[in-house]
Image (cartoon, rainbow, N blue to C red; front, side, top):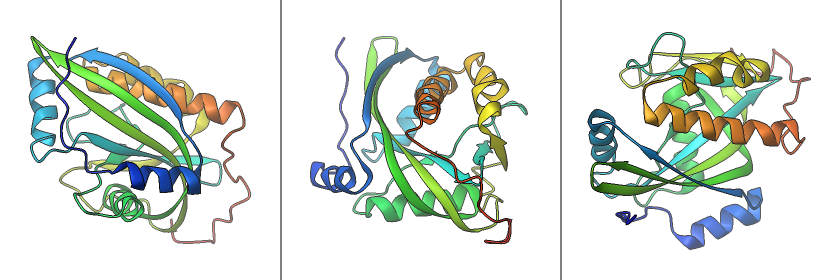
Length: 209
């Protein structure tokens, strides 16, 4: 299968800096067949050459921030994600996306996964990369700023992310959400293995929530 590669916004030099600062991520490779609606939406998001997302597992205490988009069923929530803009510093882009989708100020903690995924529809294929990071909430209020893009945001326990929230993604008709389920399951495995530790002792008085 031949995949179309789009211009990458994130240079290898930038990725090397991230690995040095936040650790070397695990590599995951996967592929999904989409329906036309999902593939058209994906291609629209790639219109300026973007071929990546930054997915953020943002913790406060023992909870993780999750978001729901307007098109999602009411029971579907997942960790936020978004794209670094062309020429934008990676860390600044991650902080911007976190704020827009959750209202939270964050500090990146660990580079967990680099996921290469091929999406296809009919005889057309494209390649996408997800960069998954653990992050700590250090300020703000959990409330979407970009309310056109994000319908709701809330805190979820690791148990929720491993059970009902994961199941809702896995059972979705959307290949994009099923991909999110695979990504989420792989990330949570690192939490179970102790590679990421949520600070359960974070004070509720640390910032407005």
